[in-house]
Each structure stands twice: as C-alpha cells, then as structure tokens.
Amino acid sequence: MLEELLLLAGLLLVAGLAASLFAGRLRVPALVVFLLLGMLAGPDELGIIETRDAELIRDVGLVSLVLILFEGGLASGLREIRPVFGTAALLATVGVLITTTVVGTVAFITLDVNFEQGLLLGAIVASTDGAAIFALLRGSTLRKRLARTLEGEAGMNDPVTALLVIGLIDLSKGEGSVLDIFVTMASELAIDAIVGTAIGLLAVQAFQRARLASEGLYPVASLATAILAYAVATNLHGSGLLSAYVAGLILGSFPIQGKRSITAFHDGIAWVAQLGMFLALGLLVNPHSLGDVWVESLVITAALLFLGRPISVMAILTPMRFTMREQIAVSWAGLRGAVPIVFATFPVIAGVPRADEFLSIVFFVVVLTTILQGVTFEGLAVRLGVTTTEPAIDRPLVEVMAVRELGAEVVEVHVRQGDAMVGARVKDLGLPRDALVNVLVRGDEALLPRGSTTLESDDRLHLLVRREVAGQIPGLIERWRAGPVGPVARPARRHTAIRPIFRAGPWDARDGDPAEPPTIAGIEVVERVRLRRDRPGALVVLADGRYGVSGSIAIVGSRQAVQGAARRKLEGAPDDAEAGWWQEVVGACAF
Image (cartoon, rainbow, N blue to C red; front, top):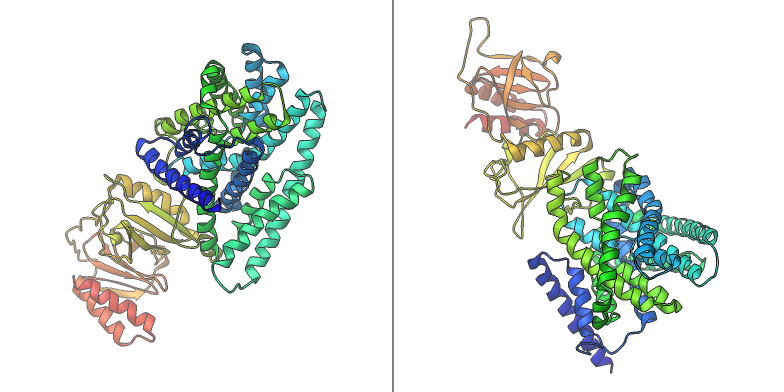
C-alpha cells in the first residue's frame, strides 16, 4: 500500500511539473492546469484517487497555505513592504469587506439565495490568492509600488477572509451576530500579529547567533519557525495564517546565517505546496456538476471583476493618490487561486445548506477569473503605462540583506533586444565611481566582466552600488534603454596662446568633485576614460581634445604628456594603491 501511495504521489508531481511547462508555453496560469489535473484524477473521471474527503483536503490546503504565506513574507521583507504597508493592510481588511458586501448583494438580488448565503459566497471569493499573485509578479515588470502593494495584500487578506467566512457560516446557521464576527476577527488577527512578531524576532536572534553543523540544517530551522508560528497562534485561538506570514516577513528582513539556502528551500517547498494544494482541491469537485452552475458562476465572476474588486480598490487607493491607471491595474491583478476553494470547503464541512453548490460555483469562478486575468494582465499593464524596464521582484545572485547592511544595494538589469546598450562595452555605461558591474550572467554562465566586455541581448548585469549613488541608477538604466550609449566623439584639439599645452598643480575646488569632475582647469570633460576606485580621481578627455587627470592634483595635457607625467608619478609612488593607479593611467594613455 505504501509503495502504491508513493508511486502515485511521484506520478502526480511529475504530471504537475509537466503541466506547468505546458501551461507556460500556452501562457495559461499553471495553477489552472493543476486544478484540472486534480479533477481529472478524481473519482468522477479516471478514478486514480477515490477520495473526496473535504476535511482532509481542507487540512492539506491550510498546511500548504501556511508554507506559501511564510515564503511570501520571507521573499519580501519589511524593507520592501513598509512603504505600502498601510495601503496593503486596508485592501486586506476594508477591501475584503467591501468586495464581500458588493458581491454578496449581487448574489442576493440575482440568484436564489438569502442575504446571509449571498454574503458567504461573496466572502469566499473576496480574497486574492498569495500563490497566484506571487507567481504573477515573478514574471511581471509592474511598478514596484504596485507590485509590493499586491504582494502585501495577498499575504494579509487570507487570514481576514478565513475569519470572515467562519463568522458568516455561524451567522447563516443562526449563531452569533455581525458584532461577534468583527470582535472575533479583531482578537484573532491581534493574536496572530503578536505571535508572528515574537516568533519572527526570536528566530532572527537564533539564526544570527547559532552556528549549525551543516548548511542544510538552516532550512530545517526555518521550516520549524513557520510551523511554530502557525501552531502557537492557533493554540492561542488565533487563525495562524497571518502569524506565519508575519514571521516570514520578519525573518526575511534581517541578515541571518544560511539565508541563501533558506530562501531557495522555501521557494521550492512553496511550489510543491502549491502543486499539491491545487491537485488536492481539484479532487474535490465533481466535473459533471459544473454544467449546472455556469449561469450563477458567470454572475459571480462579473460581479467580482467589474463591481466588487474595482469598487474596493477605488475606495481605498483614491485617497492614497494612486492614479486611475494604477487602480485599474491593481484591480485586475487581484487573482483568485486555490485559496477561495479552500475556504469553500468550510461550509461543506459545517453542513451549510447548498454548500456543495457553492463549492462548484467557486471552482468555476476561480478557473474563469484566473485564466482571464492571468493571460491578459501583463499586456493590460503595459497598455496602462504602469510597467517599468525592470522586473517587479528582483532575483539577484548575492545575499541582498547582507549587502544592504554594509551600505550598498544590488541591482539587476536585463539587457533586452533593441536596447541601446546592446553592443556597448561595460566601460561605456557611464557608471558612477561608487558602482560597478559585479557579475554578468550570459545564458547559464556567470562572467566576470571587464571594461572591454561587450554586452549582448539577454545578458543580465548585477550591479553593486553604494547607497549614496543608488538614486542615479534608474536614470542611467533609462539611458541604457533609449540611448545614447557609447564613447563620445572626441573633438579636435584646439589650443590657444593663453591656455598652456601642459599643466599640473593642486586640485581646484571650482572644478567640482574630483571623483566625477565636470571640468578640469575650467575645461569641460567630454569623456571619462578611467575611474580611480580607492580614492576620488579619474582620467578624462577634455573638450579641447587634451587629456586630464583629477585627484589631489590636476594634470592637463596631450595624451603623451599626461602619460609621461604618470610615469614620473609611478616612479615615486609611496604605496601599491598609488602605483596601481598611475600604472592604469599609463596603460590607458597608450591606446
């Protein structure tokens, strides 16, 4: 029996991965394929799996959701979420309530349900899906503020919706009141926030102080953190879902031991959780029952996409000074995934009248909205003008948090077909002195770039940038896209009787910062040939065709004259750093 179960699990995982590749080629969200695959394997079709245990499948869904939310928080970190935390929290709470009310009212008016049942149906589909949102953003170029807002909302609205669904189930059964729902939600979310914060901070201290015997043990410890955050909160009568997200958010915000292996492990396990959850939920639905609810499903889908979600987004984002284009993008990006189907199991287990019908409606709504929104979102975002040239979620090669602690940033730049930077050399990018191309990824190979390295389409540059100059990088990237990029045409030499051919002396503060001088001896700099890295200094070409050296002293003259002066400086260099710089100047002047 065990061997058969393992064989079945392995075959389903392989089939799910193959379905993911197939979905990517068709540009259809993979989660839809997983759901359909589970439905196909269920007792009403191929009969590979004969179970339709709603409680078991609900538990599988909740465990998977804990892992997905923890990974979402871990990948984000407080630094990214903090600027949009208030907006995301409002969307996750007030936004869910508005969507529930609007969709529930439409269901009550148009379908054969009472008001409490309509609200329950509206609440089940009100939550966006963390797995679907995170998958969407990984391949998106949406503006970072919008992407972080959606990411934060997806992490926080699942616990709110779960509590709302449970409260409305009690209300539909004549138990409790509306006030009880809000009191319970407030208390359980507070418990989750406190427990998640406490466990997250304790985990950070443990990871920073502990030195485990193997790198592979750090992901085990982080998995224990996720499980503890959920379990402790639920035992204290919280929901546990928000606690897991908050613990992951805090753990992802600090430099800790084994950060790279932890992140990679949870990225993989979150994908396994998604795949398993979608397959399990597909088993729950009887395909033959979908034909009986297609009208109701279309009504709920229309109410959700064109009334509930837009109204809630507009009500919250308008005071936050989001433009109408940004509001449309956020509204359309509210993907539903497996989470509403998990929540639809709650009324089935509780024995709510017509719960099986609601489950079929929700399944239909999820498939429709996910295909429609997932396929069209990126194109719509581009048309709305709310995308950038960079990915919404960066995936740099180095430990970002550790680099940030040292006062620097890591920026990834994708060289796209048609960019002005294609064919340019690294030294022609015009990077500031406190920035450099750390790694160039070409295909499956990481290259160590030189100044003469020529950029090709689909290269990925990983820039290491000091925080003081990080604000210059977005403008540079725009120029690399549109141009001009490359060496400036050097003007012909123009000498006058009042301007000496060769000049050397102390640096004149009127010429600006010697690290990036706009002028030397009052003459405009037209090209930067070399930058000195150990201290402020540069070798440049001037507007009159002569060369110049900036630093503690200023040298101006012909290429040969500057080279001769550099040789003399090299002979008397007091240390290796000084000698290295003048050797570099000598070499650069030789070409």
